[in-house]
Amino acid sequence: MMRDDEISTGRAWYTVSILTLAYLFSFIDRQILSLMVGPIQRDLQLSDTQFSLLHGLAFAVFYTFMGIPIARLADARSRRLLMATGVAIWSLATALCGMARSFAQLFLARVAVGVGEAALSPAAYSLLADLFPRERLGRAIGVYSSGVFMGIGLSFVVGGVLVAGLEAAGGLTVPLLGTLKSWQATFLIVGSPGLLVALLILTLREPSRPMVSRDASDTGQRAALLGWLRAHPGVYLAHFAGFAMLTLLFNAILAWAPEYFIRVHGIGRADIGLQLGIITAICGGLGIIAGGLFSDYLATRGDLAAPMRAALFAAILLTPVSLAALLIDNAALARWLFAPLLFLVSFPFGPAASALQLVTPAHIRAQISAVYLFVVNLTGIGFGPTAAALLTDYVYRDPAKLHWSMATITALGSVLAILILTLSLRPYAQLHRKLSAA
Image 1 (cartoon, rainbow, N blue to C red):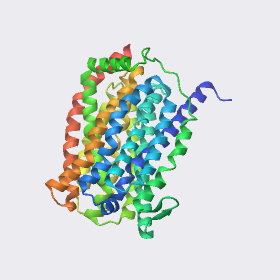
Image 2: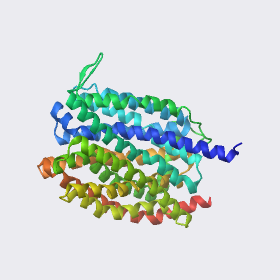
Image 3: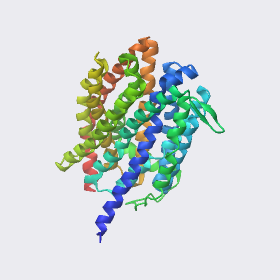
Image 4: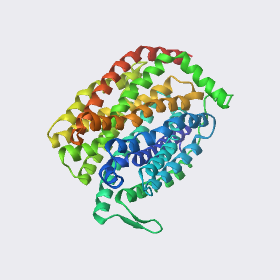
């Protein structure tokens, strides 16, 4: 028979596996757009800037603004039911993207995808923090966060294969819906399986919370959140700003990576989808897990700023690697350089999430996570793809110079991230020491 601690550990890692699967599907549905730049621009007559709004702002606006009120529910109500509902909403919204016939309709459907996805991560981070001890939280969140890159990788592979195949077939005829364009059919196909994931989340058990706010009203929760942020502004401002810069460059690269290889290096859509998908899933997934493990390793050696130092380490190495991958003339070498680029760009985001859980009281963890996601996603998802598109359309004025736009955003974002994360180390360690001693 299994001991109680074995049962508890098994249940905890089962929870991680289901939440990772949900996160994987969230990024498939979010990122699938990147492989459909050409077909959507052709059918809806869109510029790079307009397309970037579908990829970034449409998704980010409600994803960010709905995150905090949804997180209040996560801190006071069932996180399991909240996440299951969110998965169902974004899956249906992704399928609805396949029925859009105009820029406005597709924009609104992408907004709905953002509303659903806002329910997942704040509740997931809070749940994992209640299931794992501090010394193992980094690896648990690292594994969960690997769903980002496995999802992006699968979106590249599946998107490239589906779009190329459906383009060759002239679309897909669906009963009641008629003949769908290649990109419309792709949305419908990738959105539907998420409903099964929603059912799997319902099999999870809600762990007990170390401390739940006695005042579950909006006013009481808001007061607790704002009071804590006001008491420790240096820690949270540095954390949010530093990771916002990394998220900015991350989205500028990932949103346009397939199109960069198609435009600049002349690689076919299906080919680059498969190649980038494999690289992203393997190297990005390993990078984010490695970031969590490295953070845990530093913590075992007594480093109270371990998550922030792990992120800083990756940011320093990322700068030269990313610029080389984007500006080199050789297509084969550029593909190879994307492997370390994706490893390093993913490395900080496991530590980013665990850093907040370690210095935040249990009764406002989900809300703090939502504020973090609000800042980094409004900056990164909302502006990252559009910043690169604006530079391409209005500064470089040449679609073939997309890589220069991506490199410009990457250089600015990485340098600012290095400076901010360096300044964060001391105040973060002081707060961590204070809470550990309490």
